[in-house]
Length: 369
Image (cartoon, rainbow, N blue to C red; front, side, top):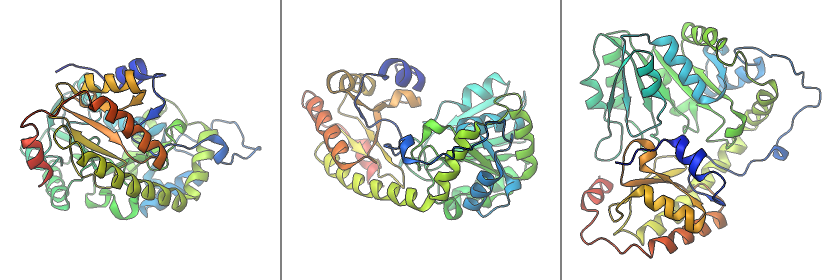
């Protein structure tokens, strides 16, 4: 497998070479002119836990007290702070793959032992495999649901089993819930007393450029993480927190747009993918703005994405950036004309890749489960 990181692909190789973005996993289109910023915003340090209005709004998303909330420089900093405060050298963690590449290198460099487990045949985090690896030294299980990049959710029974296994050893469940639109009803943070949820305004609200995220969990965990934050970013930008506050005050409007784009875009993508069944196989996404497409009819998903980028200036995410192969992540939560044009351009490249005879049997069986 050809190794390439998300940073190498997105920021080094692809940046500046596309005009249609079907690779980024957030709802796009938001500009500064769409948001209000008070002219009298005081440009001080703010608060290391986040401004009080923003923490109250985030707490309201979960139905929690603000003492359970810490605001961070994006969801990535929230995860990093949790790794560095909950685990030390010699501890054990379980992560899932394919997925975001942050956990393994950060934890390994901190001296932790890390076990990575895969997905089930239908693309869900393999809880049974994770349970077999949890032991007395397991201080954390890092779970992303819905999964990036498969778009599939963990089951309620899976969460219950993880909680029971971790409870016996006092471990934490770190939940990456970036793609959960309704944290009040769909977050798993309430399923286990040592669970911490991480999210942000990046994906559902479509403003990753603000770099405003948060964690929600036991106050003592949040306190420890916010103390460590003093050695990373100290505080967040008060300007960006002000903008995020305005966005969450209009939460229903943003979530409604997110869900509408998902509904309309998925219908278009399903029709398109159905015309390429010999080359592509799609897992049905569960509330995500993207879908995972197996590519059994293509020799290399990375080389295919490079060809689409070079010839048609369309960005896709190859499987290789998630630590796997023979697949790609395609984001369909786009305005209808943008999505249609992007798919048309991909068609032009696929036309040069004849359907592989007999390909996709295993992927097709997965899709039907």
